[in-house]
Image 1 (cartoon, rainbow, N blue to C red):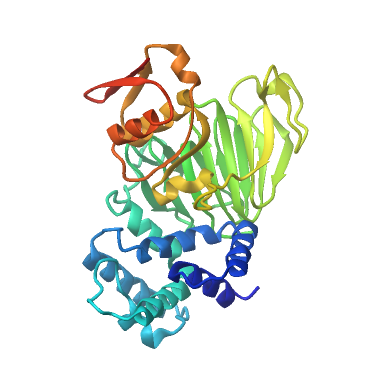
Image 2: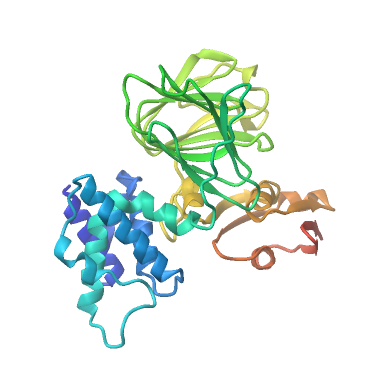
Length: 376
C-alpha cells in the first residue's frame, strides 16, 4: 500500500471525514504495521487543541529539523506549504478555515515518517535533557541512568536511538562498535537500532540476551519485576537465555517474549508454546497488546508518556507507579494486591491516579511525603 494513501486515511480520521470502510481499513493497516503508531500519535498530539506545550520552542525545533533534512538532502513533501501550514495547538486565528487545518495536517503527515521519532523525543523528553555518559576511567564504561519519575533519550556512537524509562540504566564499554555493538540494560528501554549487518547489536539483560541487526523494539528487564519482556515492532530479533545460550527464539513483528525471572531452568524451552510451572508460564511468545479505545501498543506506550495497563494486578501496577511517580507503595493488607485494574494515565498526579482507581475497586490510601499505604 502506498504511503500517501496511509497518511490520507489518517488525515481523514483526524479531520472527521473518514467513512466507516476507511476507518476499518486504517485499523487493519495499523495492526499490520505497528511501527506506524508512533508517527500517528505524534500527529494526533500536534492536532489536538487541548494539548498545551511551548509553541515557540516547538516551532523552533520544527524549523531546525527541516533545516537538518535539507542538509541531508532528505526530500520534504509539499515543501512550499510547510512554513505557512504549520499551526500549533492553541495558535489558530479566529475564523481560520478548516482547509488551513487540513493543509497543516497533510504537511505534518508528510514529515511524520522522517520526523516522528525526533518530534516524539522533543515532545515528551524535552524536560529531561540527555545525560552525558559518565566515563569510569578505570573500566572505560559509559553509563546513562534515570531516576524514578524521569525519562531520557540518547544516541549511541553508531547512531542508534534509545529511549530510557524511569529507574533504568544502560551501559557500554569502549569497544562498542569495534566488532559488535553490545550494551547492558537494567530497566526498560525502547531501541531504534541502526542497521549494520557486519556488526550485530546485542543487549544483555539479567535473564536474556537479544541480538539484532537493525530494528525497533522494546525491552523491559527490571530486577524487581516478575518477568522480563522483549516486544518487537519492526524487523526481527533473536532471543537467547543467559544459562542456555544455545537455545534461541526468533521473534516476528507484533510479537513479544515473556520470560519468568525465576526458575527458568526447570523446563526446556519450546518456542511458541507455553511452558508451565505451577500456574505461571516460564517462557511465552505472545502478540503485542493494543488498547481497545486508542489502538495504542500497551508495551511501548510509555515512550508516548502514557501509563496504560490492562487487567493488571494492583501489586504489579504499584511497582510501575512507583517508578512512574517516584514514590513507594506498600500494602497494609495483602488481599489488596490481588485487585485488578484496566486504565490509562497520562498527566494525572499520583493522587488523581489513585482516585481514578478507587472508582472501580474498594480500597483506601494514605500519602505521607512520597510514601503511600494501600488499605481496606
